[in-house]
Amino acid sequence: MNLFEPFSQRSLTLRNRLVVSPMCQYSATDGLPEDWHLVHLGSRAVGGAAAVIAEATAVSAQGRISLGDTGLWNETQLEAWRPIVRFIKSHGAIAGVQLAHAGRKSSALRPWEGQGPLPVGHQDWLTVAPSALPFDKGWHTPEALDEAGIQGVIADFRAAAQRALAAGFELVELHAAHGYLLHQFLSPLSNQRSDRYGGSFENRSRLVCEVITAVREVWPVELPLWLRISATDWADHEGGWDIEQSVQLAKLVKALGVDLIDVSSGGLVPHVKIPLGPGYQVPFAARIRREAEVATGAVGLITEAEQAADIVAEGEADVVLMARESLRDPYFPRRAAQLLGAQLGAPNQYLRAWHS
Ligand SMILES: Cc1cc2nc3c(=O)[nH]c(=O)nc-3n(C[C@H](O)[C@H](O)[C@H](O)COP(=O)(O)O)c2cc1C
Image (cartoon, rainbow, N blue to C red; front, side):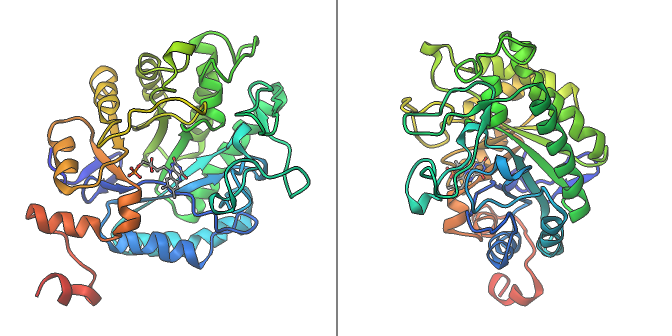
């Protein structure tokens, strides 16, 4: 496989294998994306990415990480996404959105306001989780979801997916990574329930599976559905979620209609040691791809064209997602194409810069 070879999933074809990873901009009001989102996401579509995945977009107001999160829990938000989606698509990129619920990590400050939760009395709100266990010292203690609450979360994901479709998105990624609600259910460190949503691997995976099934009911069979997971909590010594369980989960969700596992890691518990380094999560993507026989995305400290090309050429992942490098250079795919001798058209307005 080649980095600039198209990649087909269901009825969609990605023009290459470079995808803009979802990145919260913390710049929405009442969940509404604005001019910033149009320019941010739009310029990366112009930059040549095959798909641009909009940030963790909350399925309910309660599920927001911060007050600045975008949402898809009402029709006004749906309408606000339309022109952004239209622009991304008009520049040849697939428009994707990541649907999310932050669970016990909701009600937090925007990063530039400080680290951690909103102080009590400062527009903070009640958070929910599988169990009443805070993320860390000083964080809100969440309320454990009851059965009706769980059904409500599933319905919120389904309705948000329906709105994503109406807004024109062609790709939905469900966020089950980074210590947010779905990941909180997966990991024994945050899920200490004794009902059918806790305990065994099968029970801890139940909510993710039910969300996928509900979303697949409204998300057309012609369009791909991706799932982002944390392959490990980096807390094996404490009995955390690990790569073996991730492989098992990948097999399960593939059968439910997930087309690609976007393989990240961590975020569930603070203070774990993560062996950061170039492409440090790639081996997880490779193992899941090999053992679960499902398409994967590699992400995390992938910053060079040749590094990305090697990952795809070695069959470690089908696509490469880039976050910070794409913030530094929205035209990364264009530069990579030049460097690797691939052809990537440019918008007419910019042709003189790229083909002189
Ligand atoms: C500003 C910023 C916002 C992010 N927001 C999200 C998000 O909304 N959803 C998500 O799954 N990951 C989010 N991430 C993580 C990235 O998608 C990516 O997985 C991570 O940054 C590692 O990739 P990189 O080394 O290419 O930056 C965010 C990262 C950054 C830098």
